[in-house]
Length: 242
Image 1 (cartoon, rainbow, N blue to C red):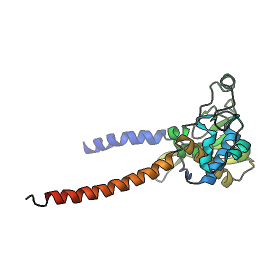
Image 2: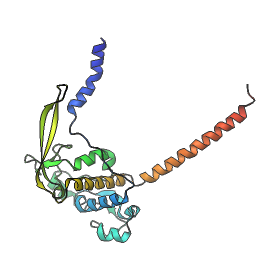
Image 3: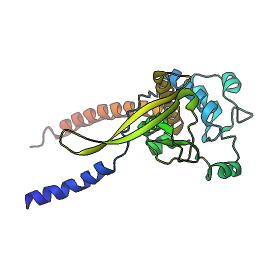
Image 4: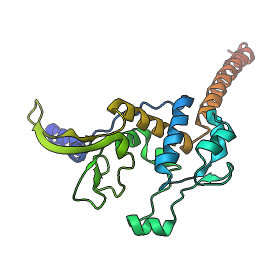
């Protein structure tokens, strides 16, 4: 009876393990790294904004990243006329639906919905696939409709999934990568670019996150001091009560 109950409790874990796909890597982004955030903003407007927008973010808010409005206007303002406008995509919705079947999603809150780790892994796991319409596929997002926008930087790669057995004799999938053609960046440089882009998308999802955390720490400290004062006051009021 105990054994049956134990196996029943483990059943959901077994199902999860059998359905688990490509392993998600930890994103090394740092929301306090202004240089990384600036680099991520540059990558976003040069490689992503042609199809994807960030309509809840305004260009002039990038001054929080240490950029001047002049720098934003000269180097980042490609889809708008004024720095006070939102970071919308330059691609018309009708054309996007005709080309891709569906309009590419807005990326304002993609880091909050998908998670930074998922995005970091996703950007690094595109591979060539002749069976898809775009000629590309992704290990994290199988049959993705999006082509690899950064392929000239990462190069072309192939992915082979093979079945293997672990030490306990259980079958599992192993993923083997091979480089078909080199990109303009080394693997380390490309991983750094993916980190910077994820860092920027995390910032776009909640620009006030760092400030909110700082306020939260101060608030907890104040509450701690007030708790001590309240406790001492309670001891004073009740010291004569037996």
